[in-house]
Image 1 (cartoon, rainbow, N blue to C red):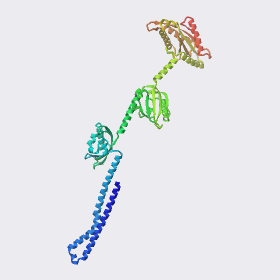
Image 2 (image 1 turned 90 degrees about the vertical axis):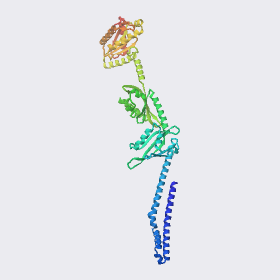
Image 3 (image 1 turned 30 degrees about the vertical axis):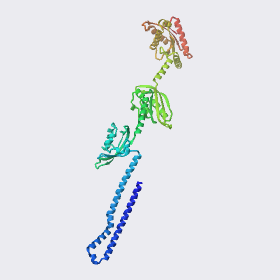
Length: 514
């Protein structure tokens, strides 16, 4: 609409200029004709009179010079006037367009004349903090007064950095005080728009954008994230969040504290390069395979031993993909639990399943399994092997006289003597009650008799001190069997050794028979 008015005014001025030129030409013609008629009607004497002649010459000169005067003076004046009016209207149009843009973008605007200190603002600038346009004074000091006291220094620092050439643009978020006492968050952006001949800034313009709602959302998200991280940090489980490339985005406190690592040692790097995994190439490669599977939408769970500081710790490890609402994989979620206690319990159960609870020696089942393996090896390589059967003499009397706890001490003493006298390759077992057996690999009957005698003499010479200070002695009887042919099995050898043991007892105990 404003452009149409401007065009109409230009057309009107063009028509006026044309009419004026035609009028000047017509007047000039009238003057010329008039002078000609006057001169014709006058006699020669009148024409020669200077006063009449001067008047006519002047009129003729005006008429003849009118077009020239128009081109040299009137037309340039009209053109310069039209140009000034057009420039003024162009500036008005630009300012109107800027106003409309700022209003459409809901932006506050400020324009600072630096030498004078005068600042012009629009009404939206004022409305953002609850004031009308008339209430806002055009001074920089009032802008300072509206800023939250804790943010004033950093706001001015940003302005001064631009003015003094340390920064190209002023861009900062800070709090402003609303008229009703509330706080509004403002994004303030500005640049130097004009400089003097020496390059010093003389004009700076910028915009205000109310970002309070965005800040409130960020605070809610930050608070939710803080609460979530607090929950994670108080979990015994180990939790991390990876992007789809396997780079660690977050990790909870538990694995860091357990291993003595810093957050910056892990976050921002590939998960498989973290200290937990990179101590062992096989462990690291297994994790890389699990990460690649998770990228394809597949979860992986397995037990793994990781490095926690100086310790190797067993973990129940799981890594799974994280999907968004559309089902797209947007991250990877590894979780783990320390299963040290579980592993220890498994080892203890395994120990209890294979070892005698009192003496720590292999129990009957374990002894028989290991014996079969050793006998098979002996037969394959055609070596010799012997078995000892040992029984504590009068063990029932010891229990009845001194109590079962004393009997337990006696059993432990025998087990310790085995460990002191026998070799590492010898297989020892408690078969039940006070009965023990020993497998002597690569040992013939003669050597087995020597070993049995050493055991008998050592046990006979030892004494067991009871809790009340009483010391007791005891003896053992030992029976021996040796491998005779390839058809023998562990049960057959044990039966032969047991028969020899019975023979030793029948012969008066505390002796070795075969």
